[in-house]
Length: 354
Image (cartoon, rainbow, N blue to C red; front, side, top):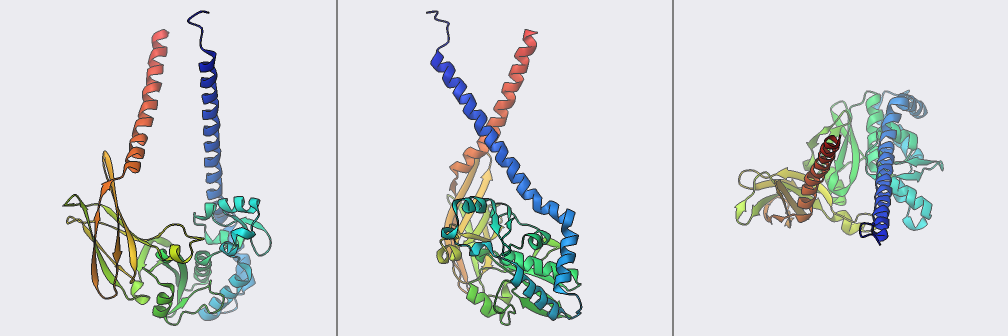
């Protein structure tokens, strides 16, 4: 046998690896395309048919009133009659196909129609899409309520407690503010905000306008008695400035483990020159996560902190090397660089052969 003849096993293995790589790449590309399509559909609907669906719903609700309270109750009644909360469907009552579709964010509404709720159950959708799909949890209830109130000239905005995953609304009658929870099927008017906040065990509450969702106002003092948590981030014994510190609430994970498998992010701050930052939060125990990337290494640390109403408590968080993030960071640098080097080398060899 010629010693230069290629080993058939090596050739076959190389061919198989190429085929597997191509299949993986095509699968990833298909997943990316599907993801982009799902994310784009609700936004596209807003521009194509948003005004029409809003007009149709407002006609159903009825516009023959100038009383904001009456308008609020009409919107509330319409939402309660038309919206279905997909999270009320228990997984054990779903077929395999329904579970697969639910993973992408597809559910049946009260009319029996299969619609996209949120892409992958996480990406937010505009209120016009909610009016179309008729699938909503508390966030969508509040978003649609505020949107329709605004359309009728009533000042309204969304209020949310991120750590406890709940959203509601507030609107104004003159200078008088009404706190309103449109997802509550029994009594939407919140008369006692502090009692409401205590019942829901809120950590932090913020409010924002639909027109400017990035500008959030801290309204926690209306709902909870707060304490101050001071977090100091160190590496060794040295304070770390510029580290991102996140506070996480475990309340929902402990109360509803079948739905929440991880703590909910409440709020985040960066440490100052002394390596400290502080948070004003509702009374409970929190998980604290600190992160900082300083090329070529990323650092991470975890701790806990307890907040007592009316008091200041302290927590120390020590950073260690975050090997996973560091490897990913280096991979993002090395892989593209390696590909570029190979391309340049091949081009150089090709030119030399000409």
